[in-house]
Length: 273
Image (tube, rainbow, N blue to C red; front, side, top):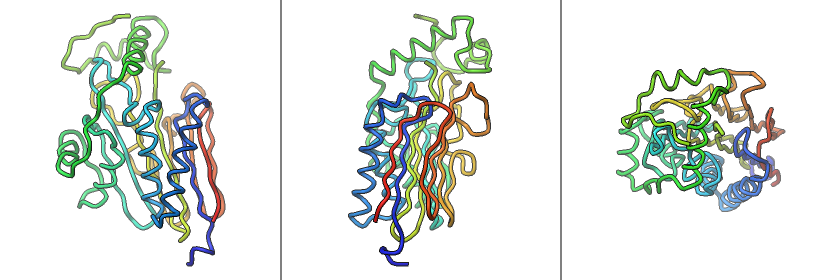
């Protein structure tokens, strides 16, 4: 199929529940994906480039902007890539990688589909990926807010008793309750000029959560999927269809490209040839 027969399409999201004021970052990410397509990159590399832009932005719950764990220090990152050519790679509970989406892309070239924890971090060092810069004051302020919520009567996570986090505390540091929950994910889906589909997704996890929690972002068929008819990326956990839970989807098919969410969700879409 020649490049003149198929329109390319890019859809990017910044997380269900994230403020729409962050749309400008999604627009930059989509523009970066388009730039890569025009340079001759395929759908997967365009999607990865778009997500790298979001990871580096610092305002989204992914990469440099990832939320801090309940201990106030630990960052755990998940990411995934998949395309209609059969490439699949994901990482979970990564702690020291600036761009986990680049690590997931590298996993797609290994004999495995998913690497987690220390092994994934070691691979990142082996292939020369940059370490995570650590949490900024914005993330630390969000952590203080979450801990304040846990100390109160209202649930910090919809449908979950606050005491569940306190009862099963599994961080090395002791629990302290000093003075908005987050579950954002960022993602991109792409249809290239050859009619191939791809997606890339990245997240800093949910808050509050116990150490080692893995959500849907690195789980094929739950947080993402790409095949011969299109690509879909989810944010917020589609298995919990409840108005209390922010949920969003972006997708491209052979003839369409769209996004939807039950909350505000910054997004951007580009279609053309």
